[in-house]
Amino acid sequence: MQELTKKHPTEDMITLRLKVHRHNAPLVRRYAEAVESEEERTYTVAEVFPEYIGKESQVALRAYRTREDLTQKHLSELTGIPQHHISEMENGKRSIGKERAKKLADALHCDYRQLL
Image 1 (cartoon, one colour):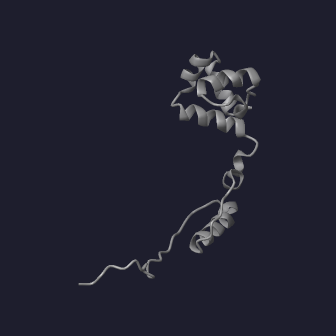
Image 2 (cartoon, one colour):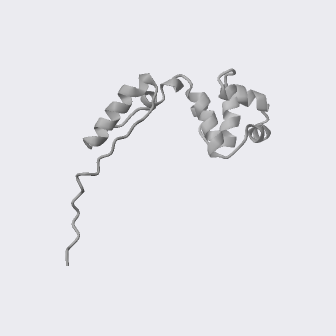
Image 3 (tube, one colour):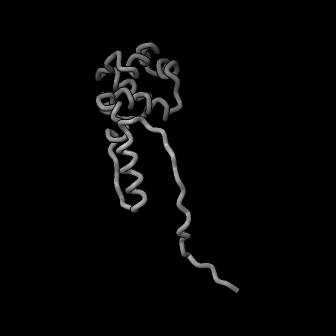
């Protein structure tokens, strides 16, 4: 009876075609090369999502609200902040401010400084 071995097959290579934005192509290529060579590499959020640089508080507000499974309307009811203000804060049209950040943080179970 033949015994199983842990030898990895060498013929398991496939061709993978991706459509990515032109400016992301070098990042994807470097990542694929790192995976193939089994290098360990970490990427910053800014490298992966450069469009969110400078929008950290907006992204954080939406992320915490989503994590808590709250709609903007429900968050509005919990905090007393009008729903359209929450929408404007998430879309960068209104600043959050320290007092509002504290109200939001209480409802979202996070540190208010993450929202500033």
